[in-house]
Length: 213
Picture (tube, rainbow, N blue to C red):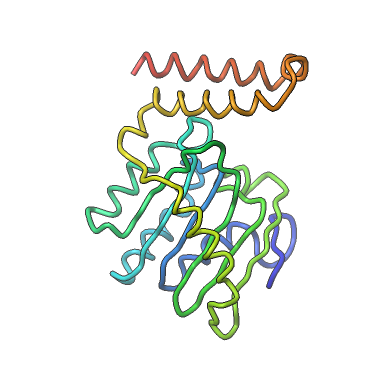
């Protein structure tokens, strides 16, 4: 077990993510936020991983909201898969997905869990901290709890559909999630939060972009 961050140590959080694709197996990416800029950084690793063995697979779980996921990623993953069905993209439809867990099965299993979303800000700017678990003897039992949790999550998720990439659909999902969050706060607390107004402005921008395209 190794503690990794983007502030110190030999292994940075970006290295932990890219190491997932260094060995063969199935890679699971469960993330609260997944941006196109971060995807572009790890895309070559994903591509080489898929090209290296026809048995390698990628499973991604995201929130289908405009502020948490970039739809261009879904489109590009479809192109990478090219009908082979080795890339599976799922959405968590029951609210805000805030977990960050990355797992690889196979002869050299590993897991990484912590604060790191798949965003460039997380890779290069934020103070992030994660635990990297990589059994020396290849014993998958050490990562079994992470794998079981992931499989449990997948059982309540749904396949990410083409229509889920449409801006109006993603915007609606965003409004729904933030409305549910607001119900947990008092009205006075919401009004006093500057972030409330930032969210309203951003939602307005998303609406205008949706109408313009």
